Amino acid sequence: MISESADFKVAVIGASGLLGRAISDELARQTRWQVVKTAFRRGNATTVILDIRDEAAVRRFIAEQNPSAIVITAAERRPDICESDLSLAKALNVDALRFIGTVAREIGAWTLSISTDYVFDGTQPPYHPDDVPNPLNAYGLSKLEGELVLMRTSARSCVVRLPLLYGPVVDWSESAVTSLVPAIMKSTGEDAPATMDAWATRYPTFTPDVAVVVRQLLERCESGTPVNGVMHWSGDEPMTKYDIAVCIARKLGVEAKLHPQYAPVDATPRPKDCHLASDVLESMNMGRRTPFETGIRTVMQNWPEPTIVR
Ligand SMILES: NC(=O)c1ccc[n+]([C@@H]2O[C@H](COP(=O)([O-])OP(=O)(O)OC[C@H]3O[C@@H](n4cnc5c(N)ncnc54)[C@H](OP(=O)(O)O)[C@@H]3O)[C@@H](O)[C@H]2O)c1
Image 1 (cartoon, protein in one colour):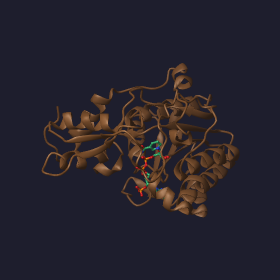
Image 2: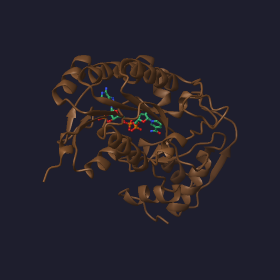
Image 3: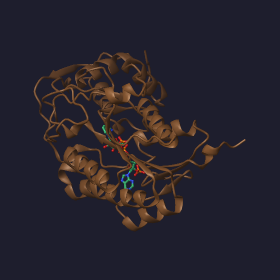
C-alpha cells in the first residue's frame, strides 16, 4: 500500500558526490518518498544530468519535477580550486543557489543547502550558528555568500554547516581524509617520511551520519514543521591530519613513516580550529555519531584493493 507520503518528493542536486551519494543511499531506505537525483560529470541511469550554472536548465528541472524539498550538495568544495578560479567558485557556490532558491520559492519547495565550517576563521571555537563568520579563503567566502543568497532568496530554506567529511569513496582523492592514504602507503617504502599537518584541529564527520541528519530534517519538512535558518552538525573527535594518518596506517596494518608538521604550510590559508557546536540539532534529538575508528574501518574495508584492515 502506498502511504500519503508518496506525494513527498525530494530532489537531490549533486547526488553523485561524496555526500550526495550517502544522502541518496539514506533516502533510498526511506521508501515512502519519491527521490529524483542529479549529477553533472558522473551521471548514470538513475540520475538526471544538470549543470547548476545553467539557470534555464535549473528552472526547467525544478519546474518539471515539482519537488516538495530540494537538497543541494553540488558545489566546488576544493579550497585550492576556489582560490585559483574565483568565477567557478562564484558560479557553483553562490549564483547557482540564487537560481535554485528562486524557483524553489516560486513552487513552495523547502530547500536544504550544505555549507562549511570554513566560514569561520578558526580562532575562537566552538562556533554556534549565530556567531560572526570570517572566512580566511575564497572557498569559505563563496560558501558564506551562497548561504546568504539562498536565505535571502527563499525564506523556507535551511543551511547545514559541516566540517571535514569522510565516507565511502570511489577513489582516495574524494575526501581530504582518504586522500592521505597514498602518502601513507608511499612512506612505508624507501621514500622520505610523509609530512602530515599537526597544526589544524579537524572533526572528521562520517557522511552516512550527515545523511541521517538530512533525512531527519526532511521528515520535519514533510510533517509541516520545517527547520529554517543556519544549523551546525559535526563529529566530536578532535583530530589533526597527523592523528588521522596514524589511525589510517594502523587500520592498514602498515609501518608508515609520518612526520608531524606543527606550523601551517598550505598556500591557501586554512582555519586552525572551527569546531561547530551542534547543540541546536541535538536539542531536536537529531543526529548520529559513528566513532572515527569505526567509520574509517568501514571505508577501508569497502575499498576494492587494500589489504589488511584492523
Ligand atoms: N568534503 C568535505 O570535506 C566537506 C566539508 C564541509 C562541507 N562540505 C560541503 O558539502 C557539500 C558536498 O561536498 P562533497 O564533498 O560531497 O563534494 P563532491 O564530492 O566534490 O561532489 C560535488 C557534487 O557537485 C556536482 N557538481 C559539480 N559541478 C557541477 C555543476 N556544474 N552542475 C551540477 N553539479 C555539479 C558533482 O557532480 P559530478 O561528480 O557528477 O560532476 C558532485 O555531485 C558541498 O557543499 C561542500 O562545500 C564538504
